[in-house]
Amino acid sequence: MNCGTCTECCKSSQGLFLHPEQGDAVESYRHTSAFNQEGNPVYLLETTPVGACVYLGETGCTIYERRPLLCRTFDCRKHYMILPRQDRDNLVRLGLSSRAVFNAGRSRVKTLSDEERAECAQTREEFFS
Ligand code: SF4
Ligand code: SF4
Image (cartoon, rainbow, N blue to C red; front, side):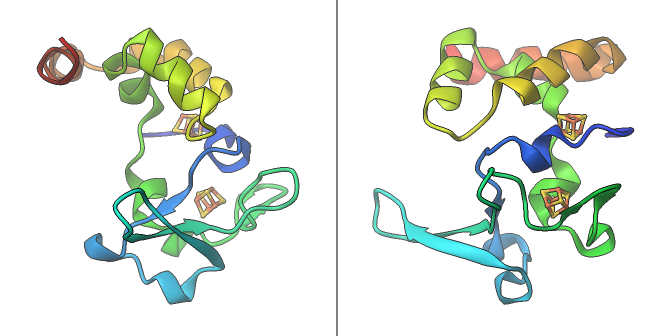
């Protein structure tokens, strides 16, 4: 999606996960690692003490041409539309998403096409009803 000047995803202390199984070259990024509940390793972009991505510069992403999958594909409008309110609240509470990102998505929902909205509604129906 066209984010314009918004950088909420990059500075909002949400989980900036890397996806090596889908092509992210983990070692090429400054990152941290941990283990999930299943004992498998997970990798996240390193963040500053205030929770921003270390690659966020004054005018935006400093590695834009090689930004990882999540940064290339995440769409806050769909994130907002697909998740029920309780799940959004839980993700914020767990530090896996941010209120600012959900607010950004809500304010941009009108820019989704009718087809995209229908897809979001169908996904929400499949996973959350
Ligand atoms: S919150 Fe939305 S508009 Fe802002 S950077 Fe993230 S995806 Fe882009
Ligand atoms: S790599 Fe770039 S686009 Fe991705 S979170 Fe960091 S600053 Fe934002």
